[in-house]
Length: 380
Image (cartoon, rainbow, N blue to C red; front, top):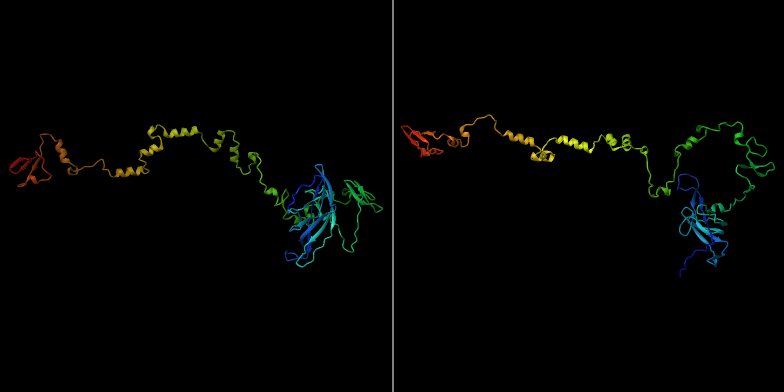
């Protein structure tokens, strides 16, 4: 049967703990240098509450709250992870014992040993200022090492310095503005033999030029993985002056700042609609309504794009205005002459001796006078 999860009483408060464990190891072929390296630790860290039983009041009811060990794992980089894989772990405020169960560095190797210790978790250990195990772990000096403890006296304020008095004790002293004295401090400005301007050219600082080579110029920068670089935000409405358009040409700026349409047209050498109409009317002039458009002119030319060539070719086949024809070249010439001759004018045909008028072609018209040697007759 699953047990439902409920919230702790409001009187319980929390602090956050972070940390990272790595092992120093000998140099490997994983990098190009010959210096020792580090490898992330693997395993678990157990936090055991020193206060395993508490009482808390919630909604008028007193509850007994038991606390047990809390186990955290280590990430691939050796950082503390909670049960949901997030860096760091939240603990109830109070004293907790810390113990380590670390995996061997290699198959069959020995397990690294890290001594346990206690730490105090408070509400001051927030998400932005967590408690770091590296600061809380006690320092264990190597065997034979003499550890000296420096006891700093209380008090002191901004501008004071910690100095050794004539009796050998450490005391806070106000920084002197002049030459100083026994047990006092002399300001840099009061030192003799120093450069008055206290300034040095870059070339006078050993190694500074080479150290600065290849560095980014001064300015504000963000890391390449900064979330702000990929955070899609709604653009904020804003305006720019024409002078702030870096890639605008001088004519474009003049056009944008023109005070009227007329000024803009002048910059573009443009014309108004009325001016366009006037120029069209000048082209049309007094043309008749049936021929005052290009479409009407094209229709009048038979939509022939080669109208001039067509007319030239047509005229080439015509006769000259000054020419002559024989009677035989004029169709129905004889008929036309007969139809228009005077009634007293008759046509005379002379027949050869023995020639039959019936054999003459075309047929001899009626009323034609036939002459034959010694005779005269009229065609029937």
